Amino acid sequence: MTAGAPKSRTTSDPEPGNEHAPAAASGGRAQAVGAGVIAAAVGFTSSWAVVLAGLTAVGASPAQAASGLLAVCVTQALGMWVLGVRYRLPITLAWSTPGAALLAGAGAVTGGWPAAVGAFAATGVLIVLTGLWSRLGRVITAIPVEVAQAMLAGVLLPLCLAPLRALTTSSAAVVVPVLVVWLVLQRFASRWAVPGAFGTAVVAAAIAMVAGHHGVRAADLVPKLEWTVPHWSWQAMIGIAVPLYVVTMAAQNLPGVAVMSSFGYRVPWRASMTVTGLGTIAGAPAGGHAINLAAISAALAAAPSAHPDPRRRWWSTMAAGGCYLVLAPASAALVALAAAAPTGVLETVAGLALIATFGSALTAALGPAGHRTAATVTFLVSASGIAVFGIGAAFWAVVAGLLVRWVLAPRPTPDAAAGPAGPHGRDPGPVPEYPGANRDDSGVPGAPSPARAVS
Image (cartoon, rainbow, N blue to C red; front, side):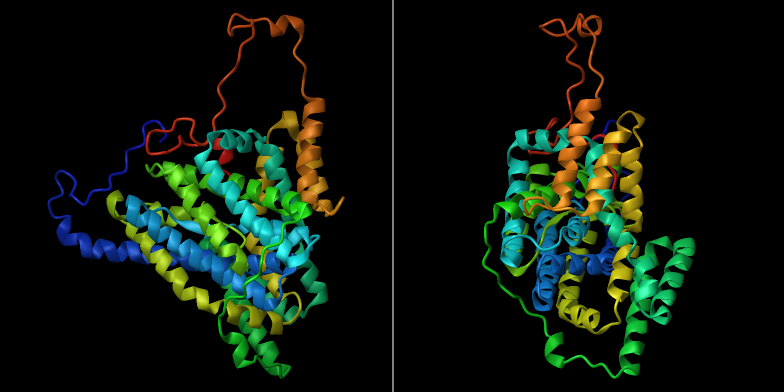
């Protein structure tokens, strides 16, 4: 926990001087439940299109993409319930939206959809190992933040340009209302901008379908799981599993810990990584790409607006999990709607959902002036979409960024190398932070550095 942050209690005893707390518990619980429902509704409607776009890009059929969306809804809901009941903390989980965006930019991989499923499972294994093995935590946090965020920004750029392309490739009567609603809500209720755009897209698509006499078969609306036997391809391991793991950790899990810390909660790191990693492994054969700690929606469940008593906010997590289980069966209907909708509608919603994340990633990447060249090279390679040896651009972007950063790094002079500290006459510098650096017996890490808390 950050210095000065209050410790989160997990007991149900009223706070000193608040003897009437039990009498107000039922009303406060309703408030927490409402916050959880809002968190789930906003999280689902604002990024489901990104998940479908990512799964489709790496080879999933419409039925397999719907199954993947259903799988991540169920696994993250169950994960929230497990962590909420065990720790009585408002630990909110989510699917990896940046990871789905990365898949959308990666495209088909050698081995097709089964190889992508194998990469999803491998990502889950890496997440579990991060919680159990602190050395791996050191490795992931050793990747410079500007390189990781520049890679993410490059992946997001083509997706964020989709609304502009849709203006020329799709019907303006469908796309323009979506953009207008998004812009208006950004001004007056930014939290609901993307859900509002999604609702507008549904209405516009329905009108276009009726006008064009395009129907949806009832059988396509029935939710079902499509199981795929994972295939292990080294191209998929390097081109999908490794970048998906890096993006999920850097853009979701570490910021998620920071968000919770800002509200006075210490996330049980080992347990959270184990639950989300095992959930990712379990959901992979059904098409689920990755689940993780929520970063943005976590604030809706952990903030004082969820409940005045920090010890009772965990009910918001339980409600969010229940809401995701209710929304999960809608996955098939969403895929059917997206397939029947005019070209560009799904891409428009996905692009609008990622604009805020793109802006944050680009700011974090280009902020440090000393490494701006390395970050720019990383961004350009990532945005290029090149594939070498069957490995996507995200991996090569990180390699290029680290190489340029190393070449351009200032070398210490002989005079500067000598110092009073360290056993060999050199100042060892500050100890890098990593998950588990300040870990207690329960496996709780110290809060990540502020530079990592970018989502």
